[in-house]
Image (cartoon, rainbow, N blue to C red; front, top):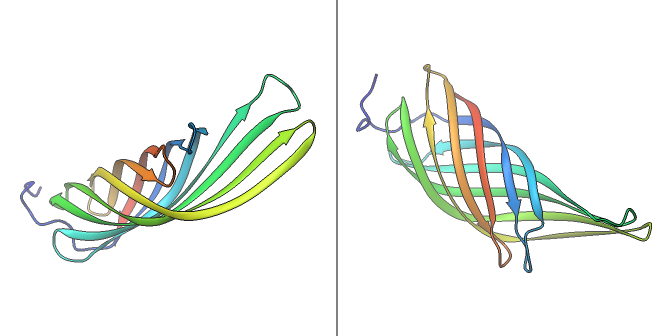
Length: 164
């Protein structure tokens, strides 16, 4: 295998990701959501890459009153410039960027539904590790923070990927 001091991969990598996200808001957390999506890591230079991730998650808050509920689906388009340390078999990455979040919320109150759609710019930071158990197969572990509101969204994901 290659030592950790070797150069980071020069090939494009694609990943499928699953995990969890605590969806933040201006006043409190909107709940925890199962999250899923995909990412592509495109090298710029030996150490730098662009990581474009698209992911979504839906949080639901139940009320003790049967006629009241709240749900929020948040979808992210998250491009980030990341620095990579390591080699083709194992590398870490960290970086950030500016992205987009699209929200769809649904509130049920006294058997009436209220639906709202909203979108806005985000600021994001992420870090993680990619391991290659074989030449093409990749495993990815990552965590991140995304700010659109006062409380950030906090996420952790794992994924499987392919190196071209």
